Length: 212
Ligand code: B12
Image (cartoon, rainbow, N blue to C red; front, side, top):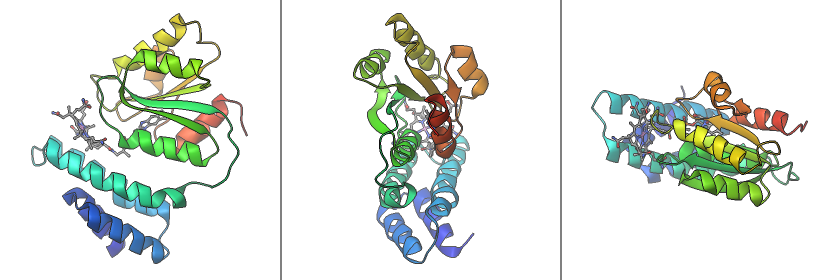
């Protein structure tokens, strides 16, 4: 790993947002690829923060300040990660399910979808099933659900059921993602698809709506 990427990773772990933003800009100016900065710098740092939390070395405030630093860095990276000026392919309503406050993975998926030509309705975090139903009524053809906690995964099933009960299931494609879920869980709750990360999410959503 190059020294600048290592410095970005370390600064995210330490939650030093201003340093992270400065170093990300420096890395971009030096010709480093946005994907490498994202994966080896930012995402790898968040994985480490998760491990430190499991080991009882980091606590919720440390996770929070690391997340803030990553969020600021994503804003700098965004124009470099996404293609600009693509025509909308379909409308996607994305949100983190009820009870779950994890924002970053969902935001990254939204950003990559937007850059690939999808129109995004970002419903935010802690989103109740009815809000997703409303979004479908407002024109979303795809519903994308994120959950990072094993305790909130079952709320994805509630969203699938709410869309079904509203009589909108046939016209809606539902994709799920987030660290604790997988394809088997998607099949189990009757979702149409699963993707493990933001770039495969774009491929999967394209496939679901029949786009090239
Ligand atoms: C940052 C963080 C927080 C921050 C979140 C801040 C924010 N603004 O998001 C705060 C401090 C709020 C937090 C709180 C808690 N957290 Co937390 N958190 C994390 C941490 C360290 C990083 C998450 C992250 O941002 N990762 C980086 C992003 C880019 O990755 P990602 O979210 O996985 O997303 C990618 C994929 O999963 C996928 N994806 C995600 N969503 C979607 C959606 C779709 C549709 C698709 C297709 C794909 C997709 O694509 C993304 C991009 O590649 C993780 C550890 C970890 N390794 O994940 C713990 C972790 C998720 N948290 C955990 C816990 C336990 C908690 C708390 C319960 C702690 C507590 N005691 O209070 C609370 C719960 C609060 C709540 N109700 O939600 C546990 C969950 C354990 C479990 N199995 O349930 C983890 C795994 C830590 C650990 N190792 O124990 N947390």
